[in-house]
Length: 139
Image (cartoon, rainbow, N blue to C red; front, side):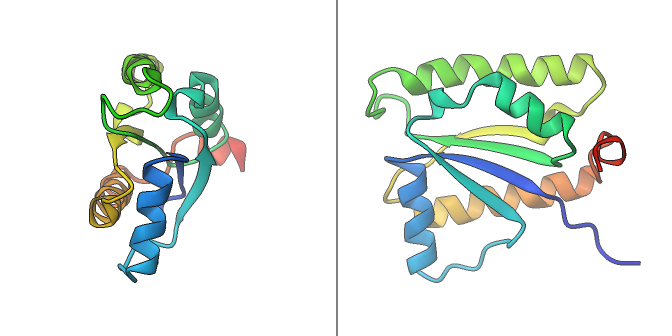
């Protein structure tokens, strides 16, 4: 039997976490290959519907990474995200999907090692949860 490798979608803000991902790459840090990064201008531009649609279509986990609180290039975008993601997690839990399939974290442009650590931990955590129960329906 082959080991389950979850499909992860990572939304990264352009100014901090995407630059942190770039730093991790140019630093040649080892990272899981099953993380698909989507660059967004701000973590606040990740609408709850995007996360719900990804999960409903069988994505095993969604990671939203933004600038640290107080460092958002759009002033309070990450504050909005910090309020939205727990609501998304609660909705998932209410419909029977483990809320740990969605994670929010903060990674700055200078934190390539933190980016590597966050995605590696998230991939491991989602792998322990197993395939998204909606995967069979979606695929």
